[in-house]
Image (cartoon, rainbow, N blue to C red; front, side):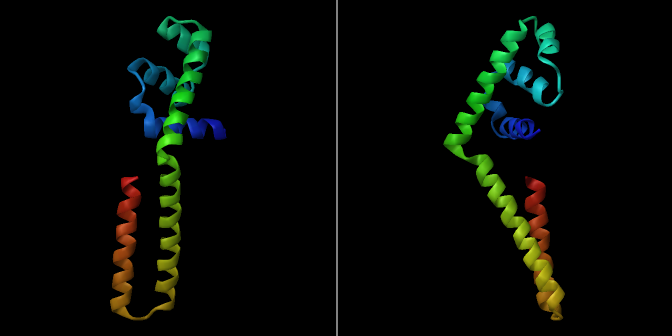
Amino acid sequence: MEKIVRQALLFDFYGELLTEHQKKVYYDVISEDMSYSEIAEEYNISRQGVFDLVRRCDKILLDYEEKLHLIEKFSKAKESIREIGEITAALKDKNSDPELTEMIDRVDRRLEEIIEDF
């Protein structure tokens, strides 16, 4: 399961850098959960050809991540946002100042906007 999640993340971040053919086949494997045999039949290529293409795409996408670290940065940003949310919630619970509460609410709204953009 972890491999599929990793492949999906790699595809989300770097999939546009693959060729059209690579994108279609890789998408069918990770998003449509099609078997190599089904894909081979659909694209009129051998099952081994599908297997090789998926392995090649995995390597290409992993190489991009090793160079750019976008998924790593994304994960760190998500964790930071989660932690900031916990801090603002704790501050709100311990606070009775309406002005400070409004400021905390503004921070929470901005965090929600950032999360939506992800």
